[in-house]
Image (tube, helix red, strand yellow):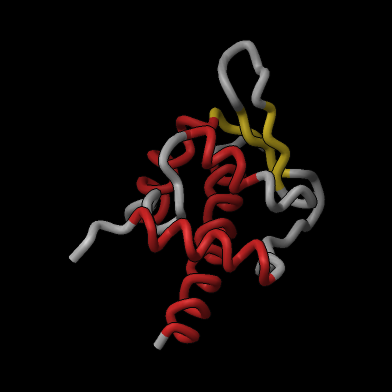
Length: 116
């Protein structure tokens, strides 16, 4: 059902971003190059970083997505070595996004899925 698909999507995005946070912290430093994150994520958890399911087409979209949790992630798009993402200090939590934002992401995710 549409409602169930949406609820599963919210859980998927939330748990993926929680795992992204853990990926950065497990790297031994509180930051990581944005382009490194998907590969590190896949090596850390042994699962694919599902860009299209997250509604992402490029690294700029990933930066925008991480920026939706400003209490947890800090994205520096202007670092001389390329964009980096940091985990804010403290026991920050990745919580589900507000519904209008989640709905917009869900719509974009569906648009980017391969057509059956």
